[in-house]
Length: 206
Figure 1 (cartoon, one colour):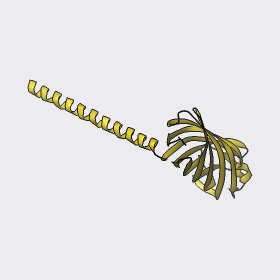
Figure 2 (spheres, rainbow, N blue to C red; figure 1 turned 90 degrees about the vertical axis):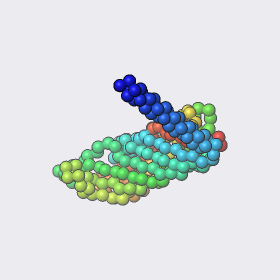
Figure 3 (cartoon, rainbow, N blue to C red; figure 1 turned 180 degrees about the horizontal axis):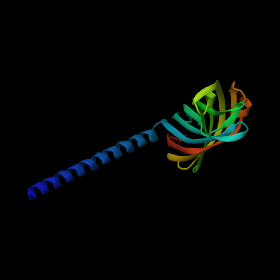
Figure 4 (cartoon, rainbow, N blue to C red; figure 1 turned 60 degrees about the vertical axis):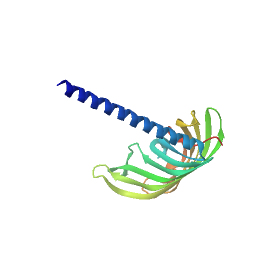
């Protein structure tokens, strides 16, 4: 009986040692990868947050995700936007429809200044996608239209320079193509602001 308990304890401690060694190896590889990015001209950034953008005369929340590769002061990547708020309106009386909007695109950025606590960037995004009036009961798109949008913006990144950062953006959104009843491009054009978190694994010594 004692031999059985001793064998179980031995197996438990062996498993614990192996698990610790595995965690140490994983941490070592992660630190090496981060150090590699810090020493090179290339890197990547990921932003997750929301835009408060003009929508039918009001500011409405849009979920936003950006992923970009960086090379020295430049960055190039992909961006995604989706309308978060539920907007319903009489389109053809007495039917009420819900607005649905999803856009993807590319984003280009350049670093314009750096300091100990704050970094500044100029970005320009080009979005394309679809906007539609959806029947909330049948979940069908009754009216839909292709839409395109250009969004130049100024971005401020708050400390630290490498890792998880707070990102604040201010810019102008210009809808350039939209064909839906009761709304037009002007209803979605104007100043916007954005707030979110950014994972920055890029070299910013330039």
